Image (cartoon, rainbow, N blue to C red; front, side, top):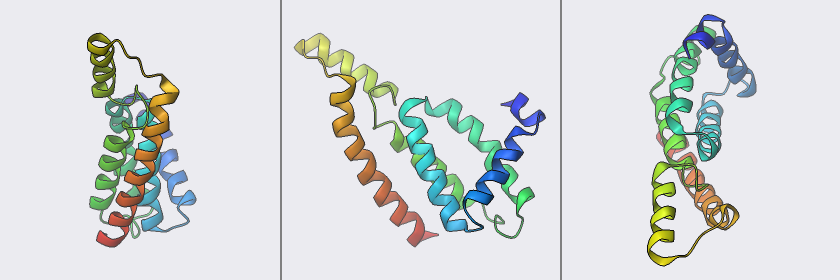
Length: 138
């Protein structure tokens, strides 16, 4: 993360977030929530979150009036990164452990696709509820 910050890549990503959100704070928070969730379904949420923290911190430098209060964006990042792990068997350590225990004690295996058939539905419902909450709350 330090190298990305030193090269200015994280600031560029913050600038792109402002452009993609079309200057809308609410759209930025929904984007952070959903992109974080999708990324966390496939990438461990700790390095992803560690990368996103400096990007969010740079947003007031990019657009001070729009991003004067980052509190809702921290919630969006947290919700997305935590809930995203429910989407795939590799999205959360607990999923990996649960599937290993299932196989060990019942000899039943759940494939990646089989898991995702349920996991994606859980993600969609979770993201919808979280997005509505974020829009209403902030």
